[in-house]
Image (spheres, rainbow, N blue to C red):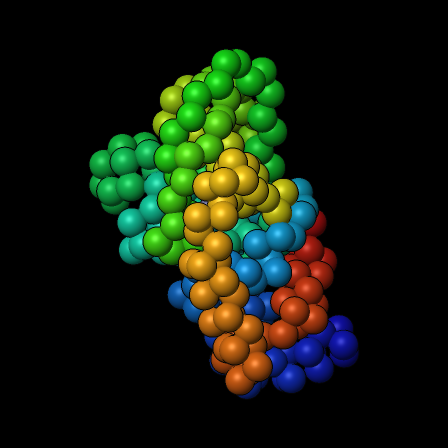
Length: 221
Ligand code: ZN
């Protein structure tokens, strides 16, 4: 605990992050992180308990997803190393169906189709990705109820994209090499921006992100 306390104190200059592990942690402080933040490459760990704080975090993830006009958001995209994501295929609050999937497992992939994808962590970038047309998903919702259902088309695509995030995989990793090369300039611009913000201290160091991830795992995994 002493180590954690020290770490939290040393993090105060990063403002947004310093009190993530406080029991009164305000989920409103969570924000969508951008490529190439190392947490987007993190192998998220299974969630072992869902408490009030985690449910508040899930609500914040929905709010961020709607705010950024997305249809899905994985925990690693808000720098949490936990296997869970939220989605609403309509992307509109109040319409469509909201899903929370904790510890999702995909099985029975059937036939492929290619379609364009984007990602809130890679703003402005889009590219074609081949995904399974239909899948079966086993997961838990935020109340701990088991989800076991088949999904197809756009819903199946979102689930595969978000589950990829939990394994540190981004849609650009699944694009054809030629198409990736076409967006090299944009990827480099994101990288330059991220690195310069890390240098000025506006974004935490890679070691700090790793330390925070370990602390969250100690709480929930
Ligand atoms: Zn994404």
